[in-house]
Image 1 (cartoon, helix red, strand yellow):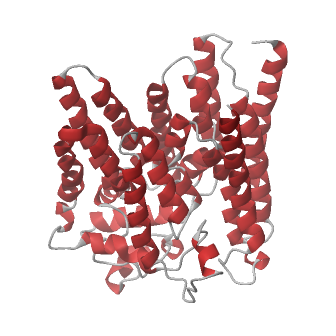
Image 2 (image 1 turned 180 degrees about the vertical axis):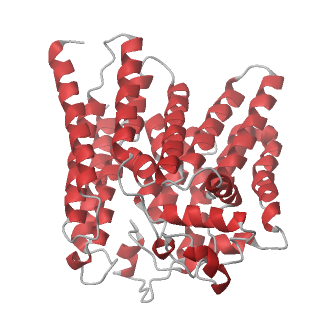
Image 3 (image 1 turned 120 degrees about the vertical axis):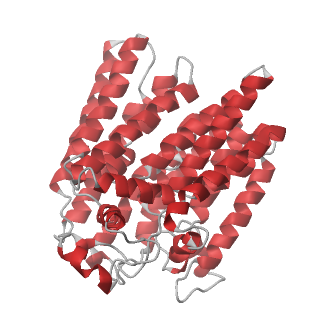
Length: 436
């Protein structure tokens, strides 16, 4: 690599790491100005990330590319470790704790009086979100929470696990992309500030879902490219197992199963395994007698938040005065199925579009939800999603409620801040393709 591009890349990486490290000074959101400073630092880190990922050239040795790739990826996650975790972490710890005490999290809400003795021994119990709502996580996640609670109750332990799993996802993504450009392209995921913050900083467990999901897609590719029948069946079974594990953590991979059917064709019968695994993992919680999936659906009736699309409809033709979202989820599923059918001959592109449709139409869009699509967006080089992954940091301005007329209600300027840059990126990409 020539000295000029190398210096430019090094400077962009240094700036990204600098502003990402600055997040550690602005993570106390009980102070009024901190959320705004946090978002500004995240935006500046994100801009530097775009520059760095765009200029990660391949005219250096493969070994040097690998060292640079993993050095930056690991540095981002190490920098994120001291950040204050999200309140979801306290929910993970609490639900693991009550399981070890003999309670079923799908039957008992955190504020149940019978849990008072446990609450007194859990200093963070007051920080548990939605205390009147029973467990809303899939059974695989609940089993992991129980296991983790027996190992350590320190946030650092959870963060390290989630970050290591995330790095493993980046490694699988390198295998999925392949070729001489794999480090350059995979950097769009591994160097992403939102990814590093969501798992190593905020301690969201979604990386546990993303690793088997990416692994399942990699096996799906192998199943469709292997020449021998035995090998095709082997990789099809591996696909089904990994998708089943992913669904056991988050239900979102279910939306991709129809495209898996298109890819596997007559071998798709093995996808029954994908649905059997979460069902089996639900047995310790009383499934099917205990309707744990009803518990998972509780949040379909809560107020929507930070959506990308429905606010436009509500402000024009379809009022929603109570801000409920359950009917939006039905529409979402219908549209995902319709989009999947459009890509019956191109399942790889279809997976990006199906998951993208789900995120656009979801009535609740937390920033860490955006990480779900980033491996696919990196693989298919749909960089507008990486733009959204930075602008969606504006979500954390909700913690500065004085900026809004109503708490947790996005103003037009905030929606524009999140949505317009990705739309511009999509438009530019479309124009370039048209000219080509």
